[in-house]
Image 1 (cartoon, rainbow, N blue to C red):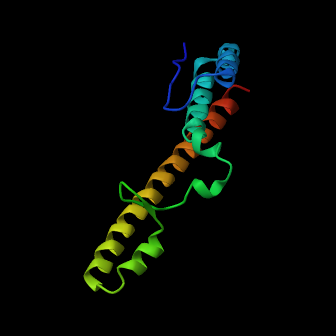
Image 2: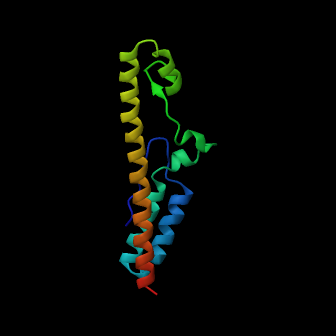
Image 3: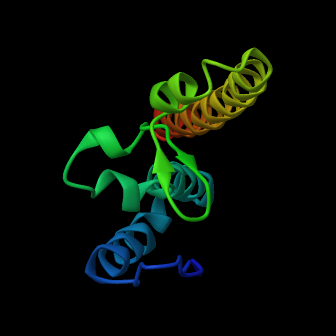
Length: 127
């Protein structure tokens, strides 16, 4: 009934099996309730690999990867400070990429919010 999703570096394990059994038991409350709960669990599961890291610092850290090294953006800007055109280009690049990262995380947050709100509405209707 619920397809298993395999992600890189992640195995379907005990938690997934437990959640699936729980959802099957909840099925008696109606498919809209189970669908809303499944949607919420899926949206919360989107970043599970990142949330399982030892520190939240890794979740939103920004770096410049050049295929052979990783640079801190402020350090990279200092390195090109002597050449105004290079500094401007790097600044524009960083601005675009940081905005993309912000937009990505806003979309993920909105997805969790919408799924939670949908679940709460369905749960209220099934009382």
